[in-house]
Amino acid sequence: MRRVELADGVALRVAESGAPSAPAILLVHGWGASLYMWRDWFTPLASAGFRVLAMDLPGHGLSDKPTDVGRYTIDRMVTTVRELVERERLVRPHVVGQSMGGAISLELALRGEAPLGRLALVNPASFGHVRILPLARRASPKAMEAVLERRVPRWVVAQGHRRVYGDPSRITEADVDQYWAPSQFPGYASAMRRLVHEFQWERAAVSEMASRLSALEGPTAPVLVVLGTKDRLVREARPYVASLRKARAPLEIYTSVGGGHAVNEERPEEIVPVVLEFMTRAR
Image (cartoon, rainbow, N blue to C red; front, side, top):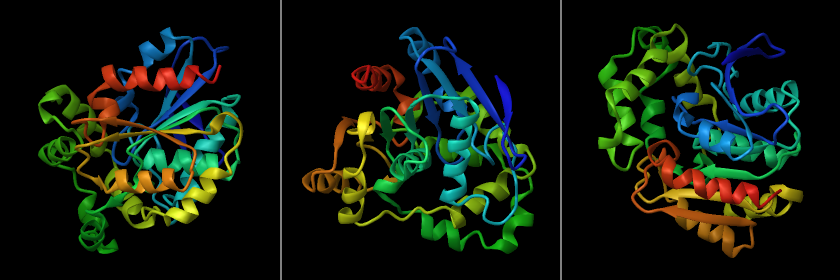
C-alpha cells in the first residue's frame, strides 16, 4: 500500500500485489467505493502470475478529495487513470472497471490515450440508466455542500451498500465499516455530490457506441461485459448490450444470475475465474 502523487498534486492510495515484472491488471472501482471492493481479487490474480494494482479514485477511500469545480468530470477521471498507468510504467495493462470505474476504463480505451490489454467491465454505468440520478441531482444543489460536509451517518452507508448486492446478507459489519470510514473525512461528501453533477452518466446511442467499440484494435477487442441480473442501480443494461452485439460491437457477455451491481465484490468466487480466463487468453 502506498501513495502516488499526480501532476496536479492530488495523491492516490494504491494497493499492489504480485511480481513487479509480471503482466499488470489494474482494478478501477465505482462511485462511492474504494479499492476495498477488490480485496478478494489480489491473491488469486497475483497467484495466477499477474501484477495487480488498485487505486482509490480522487474523492474516494484514502485518496485526496479535491473540491475544485470540474475535477470530477469523466475527462478528468480518465486523465487520472491514464496518468497512473504512465507513472507506474504499466505496459498494456489489462483493466477491470466496475460501474463508474467501468465507464472511465472504457473511455480510456476508446480514446486510445494509453495502450491497454484486455478490458473487462462489471455493470458499467455507461451501458445503462442510473435511475436514481435525476432525484440525486435535485436533492443535492450546490447550497447543500455545507450540510453534506457534516459527518455521514453509518446507517446511510449501510443502506447504500445493501442496494449494490443481489444478496445483502453477504455484507458483514466489517464491510460496512470499511465503506463508512472514508465518508468521515473532509471533502468526501462534496466529492460525491460533484460526481453526481459533473460526471457523464448518460449513455450514448447504440449506433454511436457500437461505432466507437468497433474501432478498438489489438488485444483490447473484444471487451468482456459482466452483468448482474439483480443490478438495482444501473438499469436496462442487458437490452443495450444485446443491441450493441446486434450492431456487431466486439463484446463478450457474462451474466451472473442473482448477482447485484457490485457482483465483483459480492461474488468474487464466481467472477474472478471468469475474468482470469478472459485475461489469460490474451497471453
